[in-house]
Figure (cartoon, rainbow, N blue to C red):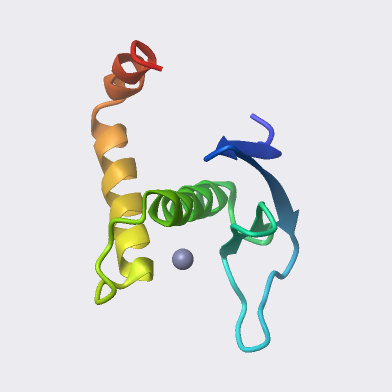
Length: 105
Ligand SMILES: [Zn+2]
């Protein structure tokens, strides 16, 4: 499957860009999301598997931004990473979940 180019969420359409050597001014980055610019950037130097994990991580940032029920003391990076690892492990062991969800979407 070719990497998706758009993610629709919260009345927005995020552009997904694969960028070689993605970095901010301090460090290289696996990915990042800008809600205001409706853009998700993924480091294309990552393996395909890591790109998908990073896409999932950025998706959780989008959900946290939109749903916004977090306490200020909670760390969004830890939450996004916890949910990413948990969701992907859960789906790995129970791929039927995807078919179950398809019934309500
Ligand atoms: Zn993050």
